[in-house]
Image (cartoon, rainbow, N blue to C red; front, side, top):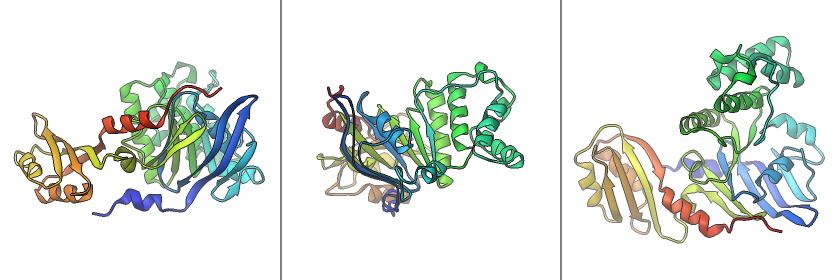
Length: 324
């Protein structure tokens, strides 16, 4: 079974950062950042509070000039070609303000007009982004009456009105209840399927693990890891932990998995649909095991990385706190 994630990570870069430095007086916010984000992926940007994530996003979005280093967006240098960069990006900050006396439609129409769209274009685009973010029924609501989750959706819709290729999202799930978080991640998955590249920051690795193709971990202004979620969870252990859910209960699948060489641990829930599995990567690959599950007649519904391993890797890589 081919690994689609590996193929995506080999795509040409949407974002390239090389030796990026930035300081605020004596505080070093970024120290030599170097990494890239391939086109068409969702890449997490994760680190403790104060790690430098927002500073990096402001530089990428041309709101802050880098003191040293280079940043390219689809090949365009942010210093010398910032107008071209701004045409290709959509930036959603961690804190945003609403024009409270506007309706949802008026709010989006204002920003679409600011990007130079004609009246006809604006009407079409606003219909599209409201449908995508499931905000159709809210188009005539006043923005001041929206819940936190609805405000986040509206802010994302605003980011999309000029059809950017790279989305820069700073803590978009902050303050959302569990249902709103899940719905937001589903919307981001749809945007990836439409060909968007999404660079999304968070201080919680596990909330991004199920949707991200890759992740950059930042700590005290320094990149500590840049690569696939899969490789991070297996770092230095030689094992991989994950969970699969099948569409229908399977009475035989547990026994099949227990008999496979390289499967070191497997448990099933009472319903017989969710299986927590740990494998020895030297003996069997995840793809090989998934093929065995498929050959058993089971239909895989979800595949999730073991959050315990991810959290352990994150804690090993980061110290937390702010460099002074």
